[in-house]
Length: 354
Image (cartoon, rainbow, N blue to C red; front, top):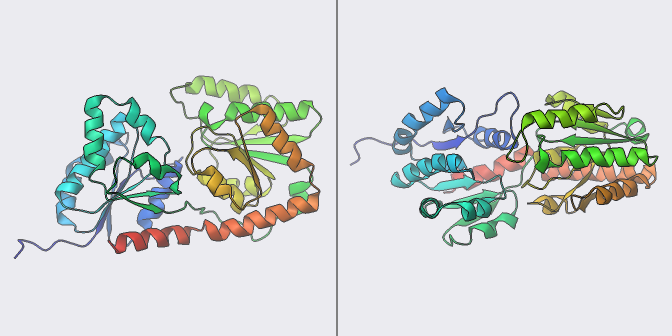
């Protein structure tokens, strides 16, 4: 007879949303919000108090609670050491371990790791039972772990859109929105340059840039801010920084094109939000983006100024009534396919049946 009876709760480990939440933290919040019986740990190493609670309380929680362990993984060395901690305690407490991935760079991370790190990665990932991802494109990266079960759970939108759009204001001129964290890999330079190119050749287009400046290994935040400051000197470019949900809805519903020339994304929430607002999406063949845009009025291009400009010109050349039909189709289909309810229902069914 056991010394004590375990409490039936699932354990969730991931980054809690902050003032300017990432797509991963938004998805994590939606994931654990689908469950009543849960305990949640903040895995953000830069929120010291929460992270300290996680380090000390998480091992005890693994043995006290008998539900599954769900976590969002990282592909940096510092993040992986945290994941190793999570997976090891989950394994020792005999839990079903679910890793919900939001990046497309596991193989790149693995290849660049040292031999001791690869040993730790292989040990940890051999203990994971299920990999969840927005599409099946990334599953081949985990072919070294044949025991794994793979589940597709598409991302979602969680904005309050109006049930209609004002076609007169939307299609009277071409408004482009760039909605993403801002760094070089997201294509901010290409978005600005293509807007300059089109205006200099006689096309009246505007560009709204929305998102926080996030430095990476390619460029620091000061240099990125200089790029933005130089861009907004043009009367057809505006920078809104991180936008509230209300402003985001307003901008999306008044934009005809969402431009996302990324080179490093898996399944951006911003693309789903743009489709749900009826935007024509122009992006690149990265991660799950091609699969996400299948069945929608959109265009896949290389991260090239000329190709992006041609895609925008082709859209502009369509009669306004055709663009209106495109917008209606994208809006109606996306609001069903990418609903929050559908996302949460799939995760709930997955964890409750383990």
